[in-house]
Image 1 (cartoon, rainbow, N blue to C red):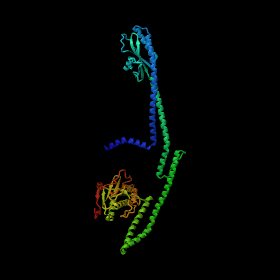
Image 2: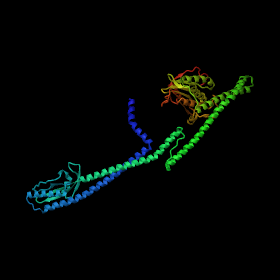
Image 3: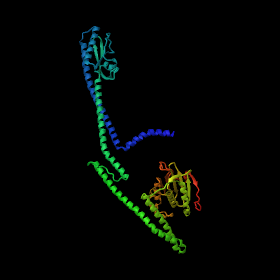
Image 4: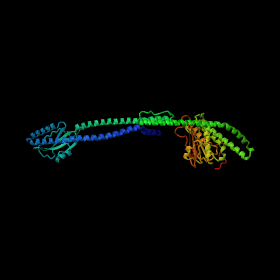
Length: 544
């Protein structure tokens, strides 16, 4: 059911999202579509206004001619009736026929006639009223207006049996001995309708051609403006990829050419600076490497002399014996620092080599915890190990991963302030993860961002108790990166710090979902896995 709902949601939301993505990423599309919409709206409004004005002009002119013509013909018909000498019904009927035929000839095919007796006609003589149009075209309102004696009433109608508009003009007609009759002239507006349709077609064609021309011009103008921008984006992308010799083509002397020249000057300046910085970086790495190697020979001699003094310290006076111990301890730290500097030099030079094996991360973590427990007896720190069920196998370089775990544990012990340390190992589908959490001094968000910088310390006045060199966490992150993994830090002042290491199981990578959360509360470690007993109980002799 979830899959179906997700598929339906993707079908509904997917196309609008793709359209929006396309719209937001293409300036040319936005400009062309905006020009098209504005052009169509303007043309539609202008076309509607022009059509309305032309229609009103055609109709008004035609109505004026119709009223003048109907008034003339109505008066002529009344004059013919008044001048006639017909007395018998047959003569009167013939007179009506002749009058209607004459009016029909005068009006032509565009005009019809309707002759109806007045509703108040009380004459006993009933004439046959032949008509050339359907009487239904005359509305009751129109008949009422003629009966009331209105001067030439008229109205718009639709010719029966067609969709052609028309105009009906009414008038009264008095026939001798036959009483009052109503004479209606029915005019067709078909010619005006055809003229208006032709004008609308011409306007529509012109509007379409105009909109197409405007859109084409907008496209061409936008293309001229966007093409250099796209070229600049491509060159900038290649520069970001390290191809520092890429340049924009310069054509002409306009603003775009000025932009291209300025961009090329910027690229050349960046190339010079990057080349110089690369040279300085190579010299620095070589200097550090050479110094580290050169210091090994005198350090070996000093180490041999120090070992002799350290072994014979019991025969020296107390102050000399203490000096021999301090010298031995500082030489140990100096050797560790030299080893870290050499490792940093190899990493910076890209000379680090990894040997991958299928190894259980849980075994590595347990071994490192067991190894560090004797050294932290006097720190009052208790380490608790939690592991998720199953194996935690991954492809890794064991010495480097061991060094990462060792550095994280040493850092946690350094800042735990005699509080417990929780270590959790979890396996996921794509990777394995390790979280080392202490509840000591903690870190601010700004400090958490810099904690992996070389020789950086959150509190420079704080004395080191585990003999760190200031390079441990930096090397740990580099080792994690060499494994295509991640090493992240979180801290909160007074609430401790948490470090999360994630390593991929295979070359497919870690995927999108993290193996485990970066921040776990003390009570949440029990939900990660089971507590793993250690061979040496780190809680012995530690006061809670």
